[in-house]
Amino acid sequence: MSRGGGKGPSLKDKLDGNELDLSLCDLNEVPVRELAALPKATVLDLSCNNLISLPSDFCSLMHLVKLDLSKNRLQQLPLDFGRLVNLQHLDLLNNRLVTLPVSFAQLKNLKWLDLKDNPLDPVLAKVAGDCLDEKQCKQAAVKVLQHMKAIQSEQDRQRQRKLQAEREMEKKREAEQRAKEAQERELRKREKAEEKERRRREYDAQKAAKQEMEKKTKKENVQTRKPASSSRPAQPPRHRHSWSRSVLRVLLLVLLCVLCTLAACKLTELQRQPLCVSVNTLYEDVVAALQNHKTLQNMLQQNSQQ
Image (tube, rainbow, N blue to C red; front, side):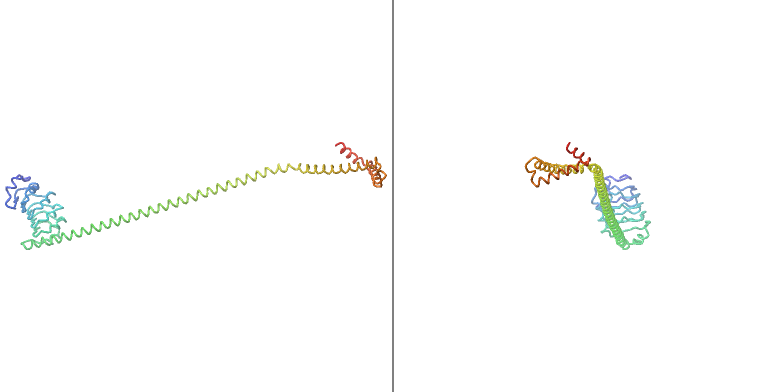
């Protein structure tokens, strides 16, 4: 087996029953693949090597029951170290560990633990104790598991609180978004109503202006027609002229009757009748009176000419 990692056959040579001793091999890394091929090796000794860290796939060695990592230079354990659920005995003496991964709380079968000679966090160091004998190491396993479970529970609660806070924040954002959308809808609705009202006012104004224009046009038309109607006073004279003609016709008819009566009284045997005598006398008086009025005589001449 080389210093950088072991090979399958050499690891088998080191296998003694269910124990595999790889201590004092000056290892810089763990031969995980070769170890995975030896599920019977439930007891693994990697003490007194130069291991600074464990690879993430180391936690796939779930068949391990006893693990010795003492006297290395480990600064931390893999985050999913808790996958080694069958682990009962764990020796981490004389490393450079400050804290343990939270998944450590999942090592429910852990019965023995040694964390001496590590620069542990003061709280963790106090919980782990000295581990100077079998009893103290067993107590260390129990107390550290309880401590890590408490940390895990607190982290779970923090995650839950964070998740709840994020949910509440999301709900608040959604509520704010809905309120904003509702406000925008209300604003658009108001703007639409205002636009509709503005258009209605414009329509009413245009309609009123149109009606006013029609009234003005109608008024102008009426005023334009008035001179035409005022130029018609010629018609009343026509009416009066026709009326005077009618009167003239009546007078002519009366005159004709009078002339017929005169002719009858002058030319017939009726001239001796009392009525004709009166008519003849009246005629002679009228003719005498008319001869004295030249104006009437001229009018009679004009009418006779017409």
